Length: 165
Length: 165
DNA sequence: ACCTACTGCTTCGAATTCGAAGCACGCCGC
DNA sequence: GCGGCGTGCTTCGAATTCGAAGCAGTAGGT
Image (cartoon, rainbow over the protein chains, first blue to last red):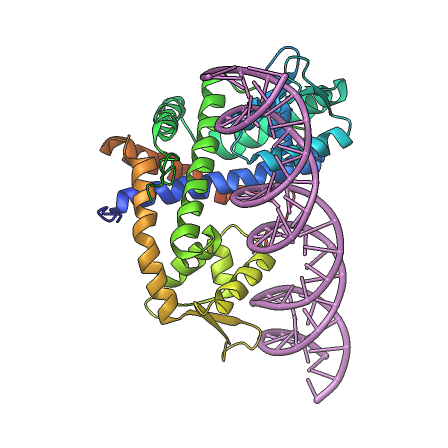
């Protein structure tokens, strides 16, 4: 069914560069986080999302929506963080189904400590070779792509209604 | 150790956009490959690397260098591909330690079949919202980053090759 | 109040990932 | 030829990922 013209050289190169750069960057960041804080990239992301709110609290679902991971994976990683004493889990009083995840002081402290090295890696690997205008452009172009992705039907989100036998 | 100024808003936004877009794109591509060909993204990449040479042959190490994955992971995935009859593994006559991986006709056929949908996904998710100039810029900027990453010392590991002359 | 659908999260099993350790071959000097 | 070292790949165990199925709690219609 796909009826798409093949990608030309420019398009392919852009796509490959994107995937390769992000992959390398992710590996480097992951490494640094593990070395300096014993955190996986996912765990760091969770802490970072919690850090965005002044009270350091978010519902599981809110976190999941910010991240790309599956819900079950989030459950697992939050459990790991809780085991390490970096977050706490409390049922919401609003809605008994919801779980509120809260960063503990240790969690916030660790985030702050690790963030320095994180920024350092990003700076050195990604930002150093870029001019100011490059960074703006990157943010601009990729921001547009991100928005676009959000508006697209997930390809197999077939009408949940009637499969119309 | 790290003595880096915090990232400003633009830099952070560019970094986040990069990671988010690549992550979503990867998930989408992975999904498509699994649905249409029963392949993981890694397996697809391996087949694609094999497809780059006219004879469809590469040594394990050469494949590993093209990809970001660990050697052991490559062994595992090549074993999966071999089990599915998409590649064969033969010891090199040159060097008994080396293993030559060769794409079978079925492997090549599957690659060709799956590539169409792959291109379609990339086109729809990544390229559609971008103008010609955006794509060129993206390739340009990210290409520069990739080069830069290659020249940087891995932060804590000595190069595998001869460090000095 | 009841029934049904939906939402939020967890549990489960399978697949994949990595790094460390191990095995076998090849190169170099003596 | 004979050690010793480096290289190429595999095996092993632990951690992480996902989707499907399951378990509450919530909301709407009657």
